[in-house]
Length: 302
Image 1: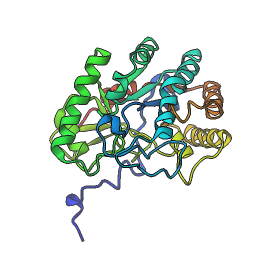
Image 2: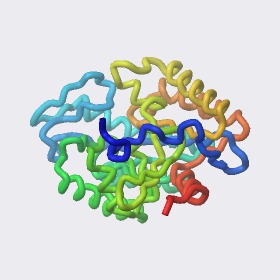
Image 3: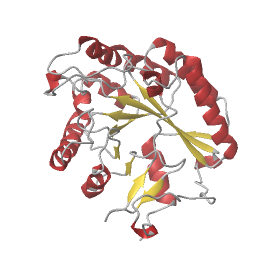
Image 4: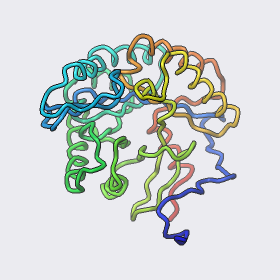
């Protein structure tokens, strides 16, 4: 059996003794909403890729088309940028709800008006990488180059370097490369806990602020997932209720412009925003606010 200290995964975490996160004003739960902005950076021959996108769209089970444009797929992504984003933007700004954008640098560059709207709303814009592609089999030099390009382009488009990172379709090298870059306040490429935690796998400790693949509209686009807005709302409500009852927890909600931005799904998001707002002792925050709070109250071990 492999010795415990040589096994690279942490299956113990906080165990039975999760810390009291000391959320501001005695909140029982921290809730944060992510709006993924990926449209215009997906796999597409127009972007120099060998085939079309096949992931996270209303064409469930789509296959990549080699060496050709996939016009239906492109159109679904275009909806997210042209209409879905603005529907979500109206909902969140009308309710004065904070949000974090996971913005793919190439996508942000293609829509300056959307970037301006994000900044006017005081949303955090975290980096979602340079391209919205799968890095599992991308070589290390290319992935490192894309990391650098993501930061450079993000900084040029938004005026500030990103402090949060979420690649999503990451590789076994991604965490190390982000740690080596050294300029991020947090890394969100984890689904491993209900609270932030420190990763000491590399020379520089990394604060992980876990994201979610279950309280996430991506399940509208998977074979085993939601097929109605009511199912989505019920799942979000049940997740919130359990975490709120337990106390000292964090809830993440993942949204995509081309998915939750559709009217029938946006209605469920709106109901959930109202449901959360009706509860006391809830801290609705951007991910960067949670990360800075954690660093202040639970700094990395020396």
